[in-house]
Amino acid sequence: MGNFSSLEEAREYFKGDRFATDNGMVIEELEEGRCVCSMIINEKHMNANGGIMGGAIFTLGDFAFAVASNNIHKPTVAQQVSVNFLRGARNGKLIAEAVCKKDGRNSCVYNVDIRDEDNKDIAQFIGTGFKL
Amino acid sequence: MGNFSSLEEAREYFKGDRFATDNGMVIEELEEGRCVCSMIINEKHMNANGGIMGGAIFTLGDFAFAVASNNIHKPTVAQQVSVNFLRGARNGKLIAEAVCKKDGRNSCVYNVDIRDEDNKDIAQFIGTGFKL
Amino acid sequence: MGNFSSLEEAREYFKGDRFATDNGMVIEELEEGRCVCSMIINEKHMNANGGIMGGAIFTLGDFAFAVASNNIHKPTVAQQVSVNFLRGARNGKLIAEAVCKKDGRNSCVYNVDIRDEDNKDIAQFIGTGFKL
Amino acid sequence: MGNFSSLEEAREYFKGDRFATDNGMVIEELEEGRCVCSMIINEKHMNANGGIMGGAIFTLGDFAFAVASNNIHKPTVAQQVSVNFLRGARNGKLIAEAVCKKDGRNSCVYNVDIRDEDNKDIAQFIGTGFKL
Image 1 (cartoon, rainbow over the protein chains, first blue to last red):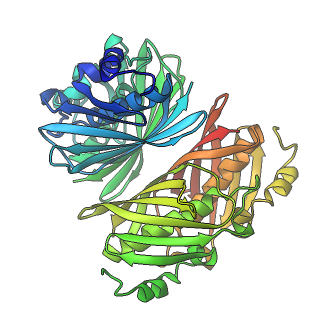
Image 2: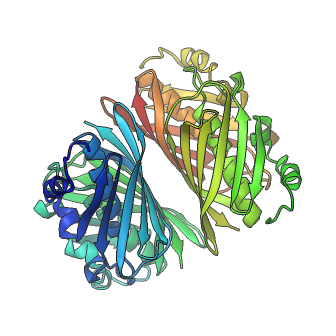
């Protein structure tokens, strides 16, 4: 399946991602070149204007990027990310699906779509990774 | 000075940004079109590979963007962000300085430079905001 | 179909896009929220290292973005674009397919995939537009 | 000074960038980690709505990126670019100044500011390069 032989092994390894896991993010699915992560929105994800903080949405996308890319090559680090915030979200669950768009010798690109439970687009995250 | 008449008033308002403040981010300086925010790195900001999670760095940049832009027009929301991760950081303090690059009728652009205590570039964050 | 009642009308209007059309770009398909543009690579698209200049690839993507978005609302202007260059290309035809990802009151987001004749990814272009 | 021992040598080499030079772009200054390129706006740079086509502005930025980065390491190719269009421009001269933000072993980041003759910001271009 990649560097992680099972979903459980990946979950165990990514417990070390304190920022993502302490903030409520979990790995739901993992296969080669693709993964799904999610978080249940709570009041700790809020910003001062009453929406979800952009950093929380980004972190979910970045976590999915990290899981999918480090499954292919570990360690892979994000070099550049572009994110479009498409629609506000206030409660329920956010689901991030990362798909490998390019897997080169030294670099990679993953597209991460972040949607709500009604499958509406919340954000799109495009990450360029560098393979150390 | 803008929508916030003092640094204290801005700090009080942005206590409502639970994601940024619970994760250790604070406002240090605020003036029209510019602000400085910071965070002391701790083990809760780590990723699984032992570095600072990209989401923590992004959140610091996004917080500085939010403070500076909402001082000019409230509410302003991020529409698009591009971030370059320039150098790893592992401990000490990160400082984000947001500067207004464009302040249009409906949209705005802020450049946020994130540096460590030695003034080395850690990341650059470019945020496009929409004025609601 | 949108602001343009036919492919011919759109082609006529976009003759005014001298930069795209003088550089060989043509509209192939147009429907609401989607269009396809293309260019045949020639020596005038080259850079100094013998590949296709990034500006030529970007221009093809930007042209597809302009055609699709101005079909929905005219004038729409690009505010921000992120582009990932995924693979080199040297000859043949490049095809750009623009698809509307978000169509808001004042702003819009289009994803433009640029591929070669073998359907291989050459670049992905994400454009945020503002509706004037 | 880098891979090019003089401005003349760089200009000679970049005659091979047909897309940039045929479209009117020239190198004005070059030093290690920085260069300035420019173009005089003419009717061939226009889009269908009467402004300068985004592709022309991008191409000027990409040309400055290419000249500055290939002076340090040849060949360097753009992997990812983010561009913010800050203000319209219709005539006169556009000046792009590229400055190296990061020069790593395998990758680099250049910030390119594009301004008009009155020194007003027209666009900012952030390019991530890969050193082949």
